[in-house]
Length: 98
Image (cartoon, rainbow, N blue to C red; front, side, top):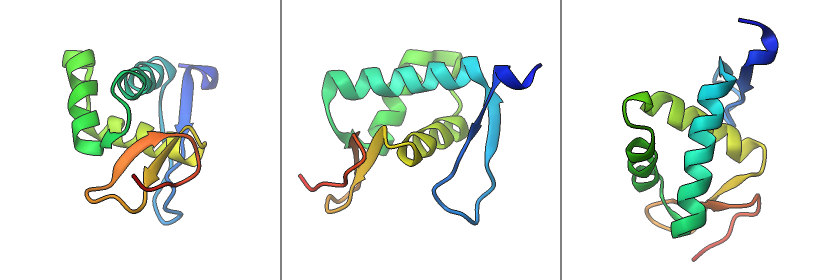
């Protein structure tokens, strides 16, 4: 597998190690996350994970879901809504409260 076939996912916690996965898996999880948020709007991370699992079926991996979601936060595609309890995930890079 060549380097161009992998994605290095960055964790927002600098004490955590970055993870490299196949680009196809990354794109499948990322696409399922974006599709769910586009259709249903901001939601708690657990619910989003269940929706991604429903879309991906046997290809779903909770560790990879979390790693992709965190990488998307680092790159500004998603944000955690800081004042919501439980914490919700939405589009964009600026934290907001609902």
